Length: 400
Ligand SMILES: [Zn+2]
Image 1: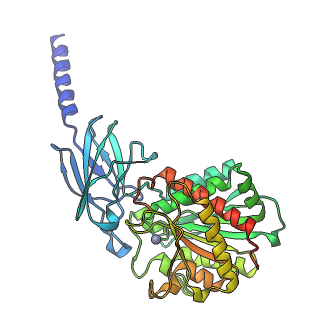
Image 2 (image 1 turned 60 degrees about the horizontal axis):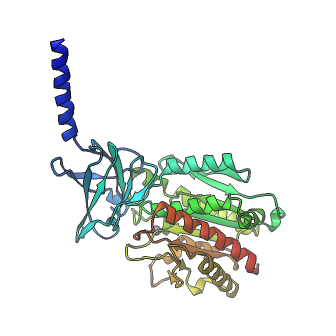
Image 3 (image 1 turned 120 degrees about the vertical axis):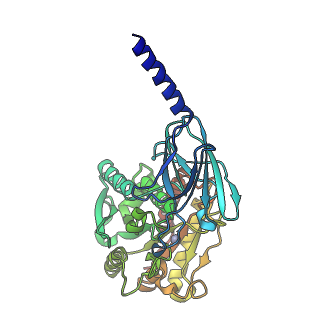
């Protein structure tokens, strides 16, 4: 009895000690994870990391990690070393790796930022923005196909590393096949730009919804959506942008090196040849100082009179619909020779130049460094983008 009481007492002491100072640990050994731990100060509960460097795979700006050993209720300090694109004003934070919120604004210095976050449970996840990796893309596509008779899955290709690149096709019985509009939407040619995949998800959620405008669009168009183009960089937790020898959005040429770009070009060219291609939407996230979404548009030299008129109609429809917390900046930006020497290899420019005159091809850059750059904000913008697309095809005369 005495021995039992003693062992209980010792046990209580041990658990009290453990409660006082559980050991904080950081893990990023999962798909899309990225962190190089610089230090963990167990006394001040401060974790210091930087993105895991993979310089050959583009910008070192993406970070996403799990913290274990949290004393429930305690406040952690998370310091991220880096600058510019690496340090958002607010970090993404989750207690279940599914539901993402923003932290309060961090304390920013030139080459680092420190976030403080109270954590309710024993573990937490922190990231540059709300993560969206291959697992989420596959789960969503499965759910969309299960829940909607108008959605079907397709495999765009196998990536260089051998991963299946998933896509979704949406159409509802309506107009004859030869009259159907063709719309291509993809995100994540740059792996770190997770917000663009959330915008794509918002677009699909709306497209498959009961909204009468969504049904109208499903009946007259076929929509192809690829939530993640550069799946290999996403799964490796790399930035992807400006990777060697070039990234996906400088690969749109007659000799593309990435299987995803090869497959997309082939698919789009076939649609265009059949007279069933009308709109190309390339989804991105811009620079840290861009506080509103905006469009990059092709330069005038690769647009016909009809193409320019249709582009104006798309921009007009987007200005009318994209008025939520992430409100569209009405001034588009051109990406021609003055923007990049390889401007012809940017996807929207390549598609514009190679497709029929009436086809509109644009890149939507969604602001990521604002209080509204949350999963809710991104989903809403995607929904507004869907409404804008439907409005464009309702109001414009396409002029094929
Ligand atoms: Zn980008």
